[in-house]
Each structure stands twice: as C-alpha cells, then as structure tokens.
Length: 298
Image (tube, rainbow, N blue to C red; front, side, top):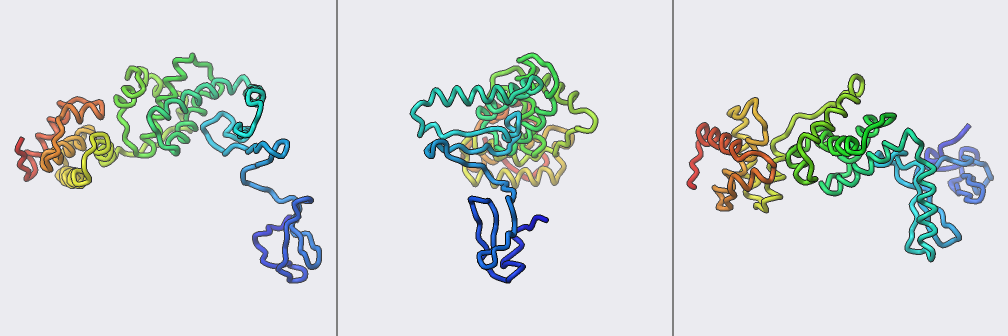
C-alpha cells in the first residue's frame, strides 16, 4: 500500500524523524531503520532534465491553448545549443507526429486563437476559457480556414462575456480587422456546436468594466473614474437605461464626469473607443441629466 510521505513527520516503525529521499531508487526511506515509506511516488510538477548534461528540457504546462493540453509538449532552451536548426527541426517533427488527423483542425484553430489573443492583449484566464470552447466546437469537424478563424475570434468574444468582462463585438472586430458579420458567423457556429449539454453560461454585463476600459484608453484621471462610478451607480438606482445596452449608460457616465472635472472628451472620441454610435451616448446622457440633479456646462 502506498504511503503519502507528506502525512508523516517521523517513521511509523521506529519513530525517527530522519526520513530521506533516495534519488537513485526514487524512494523515501527512514535513515534509522531503513523502512521504505514510499516507492516511486508520483510527481505532479514539471519534468525537467538535461540533454548531454547541458541543454535543459522541460515538460510543458497543462493548458487549453494547445491541442494536447500541453501534456505532450517539450520546451527546449535553444540559447545553450550550438546547432539550433537541428533541434528546431526535431521539435517540428515531434510536433507533427503528435498531431493526429482529427486534431489538425483543433491545432489550427488554437493557433488562430493565440495569435488574436496577443493582438487583443487578452488575459490568460480568458484565453484558457476560449481554448476550451474552441476545442469542443471544432474537434472532429471539417471547417474551412476562414470559418476556423472566425470561430477563434468568436470564442474570445464569448469567453470575455463568460467572465463578465465587457469587450464590445464592434471593438474586437475593429482591432482585429474583420467584418462584424464574420464574428457573428463564428459565434453562431460555436453556439450550434455547443448546443445541448455544452450550453454556455454567460454572466450579465457589468457596466463598470466599460468605465475602466474608457478611463484607460482615454488616459483619464482616477478622479474621473470615481465620479463615473458614482454617476453610474445613481443612474442604475434611478433605473435609467433599463432594457438598453449598458455600454451606453457607462459611456455617458464617463462623458459627464470628464466634463465636470475639466478633462473633457467628446462623444465621438468615447464612441470610437468602444465601437458604438455617439447617438447612443447622447441619448443616455440626456436621460441622466434630465432625471438626476446634474448641471453640465459645455
């Protein structure tokens, strides 16, 4: 029976606390009586070894950003290699051998995903979620390259919504350089592929995330951020903008706060940051000013 060495502070046989690890036989042994506490225990960390006693090779970290979840991956430190081309070719051959026919489309989709995640500067936890969604949606399917690309972008958009992080579809399409219809096409295909048991649970949009995004993009001060939150809180308290996109209410709050604190930004500037219409901001702005005790001098 295997013994978990971490449960023992001393040998259960003689009571000695001199428990050592024998790297040659890969066992935990009591130094006093010689009792083997555990033989070949499982190691759940990264596997690292040195090729020719000089080139470190490390096993990959488990992740959904690659088709095999990183289990079969090997990372080689090329800086210490003399013949880099040789090892790069070996790694490519190894990668080709690890990808089966059914996984090729998944591997291609995840390549698109990682590329666009860098462009959007997407947080790692969002990319992991998108990778999981994309793997399920594309595995065993046969899509064209353009469709796979659209699905990769759409998976990022969906992952943002799942984590409650607001990233407007228009803004994503603009930053990547695609048509909005292509993003919707990718989302529709993912939705069809994940129907039934794999139905996605998306969090309700939080308008405060749009405030953070605008303050950062427009280089506004922390005071504008605080006042925007206050205006937004009061607007929600008065139930303004109910049934309408929260992005409009958040944008109008930032617009008003920037004027009140002499850091004025135009409605068009704010609209361009989020890929929305300035008319939406104007309408929400009118609602806030008319229903709350705010006087704005433009």
